[in-house]
Image (cartoon, rainbow, N blue to C red; front, side, top):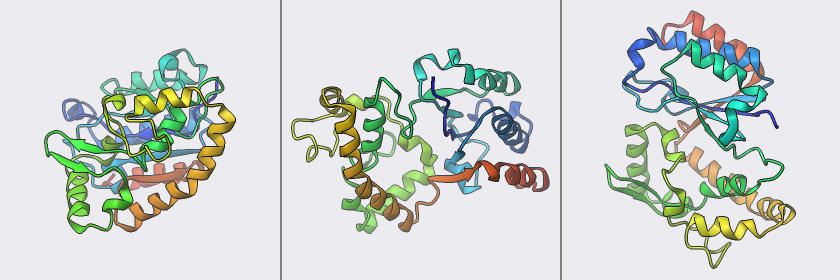
Amino acid sequence: MKRPIWHHLAYPSKNSWHRFGSEGALLRAVLEKLASSFDLDEVHLCGSRARRDHRPDSDFDMVMVWPYPEDWDKDPYAEPLRALKEICPPVEIVPCPSPLVIPGDSHREWFIEQMIVPGRKIYDREDGILVPDRLDDWLSDPELVKSFRDLVSAHDGVELTWLEDIDGWKSGIGSVFPKAKTFGDVAREIDNMSEQDLTSLADVLRPEMENLRQQIWQAGHREFVSRYSRDRLAEIRFEIETSPSW
């Protein structure tokens, strides 16, 4: 099995927050365990933690992005995660496929994840905010940008990257797969493509996706993800120990 090469980290739910004592202690335990136990390329801190405005009532649990979610606990690299659960028992470890890992025998999930960013609708059932299919269709619209920023401020940005049922969400991917109506349809078409064809298609689409990410950044959505290299982990631990704001 492949080792994980990066992780999304979000933090405790409001129902378990009081059991940790302080957020600094939790983050320190998490980072020290990850840094000492994994050969990580990088760690991603998402949502309010990346913005350094984490709220005690944040309601998203910790997410570990894992290339083999269905059997993560059997992976030899998962031992540190089991130990981490013992250190921080209220934290839920939710394995998810990583968009940066192509499993040897399954590339469909990787490709779908690559396509979710440039082509999907995000709908928040409580706020009723609908974001159009393509990000570049609304980034130039001040009202839509404001609505999206409001949505992000009300809910940690990391939550927007996971939908409860991707098969049930319409996608803006029809120009690439004309017959596709939903991500489920896309998945079926992708199943019939070779890994080489998928890689070639991803190479074609990657500049467009990177352009969209740059537009998001320029539009002020820097709160989505802060990326930290392995060398940066030691600096983060030092900051945690010396700064009460963490």
